[in-house]
Image (tube, rainbow, N blue to C red; front, side, top):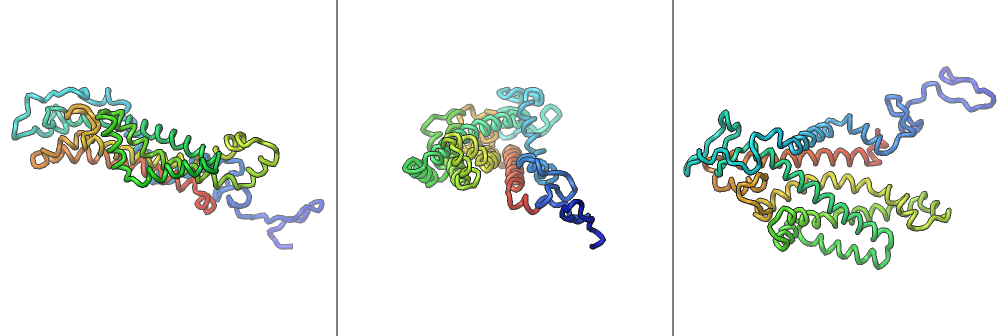
Length: 324
């Protein structure tokens, strides 16, 4: 008997004293914590808390949300106020000062206040459009994955048709037809996202339908509706949620692009990042900061959502979980 084995008790098999703690075998992670009863999302959250990229993304997103929600308290002026209108000259735009830390724009609006209120506008468009696109995509993907057959074929041909058109071109066409209002931008971005979510959920459901637990549930006499809603769908929405996080970044960029093209409605002095970029085109030689500042806000916000989405995708990937 080796030195690191216990003698058998009542015929029980021997076991090493110093068996390595591994998440693959004994239900513990390398640090010795019990993970046998830990769910997929709990394990992913534990992984995200140790990922510096995920932490950076969460910090950026949290700051963006705080600025958007606390805009009335943080912004020195309202979204439609033009406090420096009397200080604007045809060939000169006042720069940063004690009263206006980031200067004024061509219309006499405080740039700092517009950036803060622009965060709220971008948050509203991004979240609402993603939620609408997610709802439509989940519904279409669920119908295709549930019924199969000619219903699945018809739904996927519709998805293929929508994906054949460039997303920005499709969004511009829908926004132009619906009218130049913020709601038309939200609907346009949502429609563009529907085929992405639908195809992703449908593929995930088809992969789950062949799993052993689905076959066992069907053998027990459960109806197709019960198996789909209670087993297949809950195990298929993980990739869709990850994609929704990534799509938030795209939604912010597309909202700014549509507003830049003048499809978001509102006055030229509207406090919205895309609209600010449009107004700044004529002032690049005089005040380039008017274009640089909203561009930086758009880039950093999209980066934050992208970092969170990519980190969540890695944390939920079974191949990465088995390597930990």
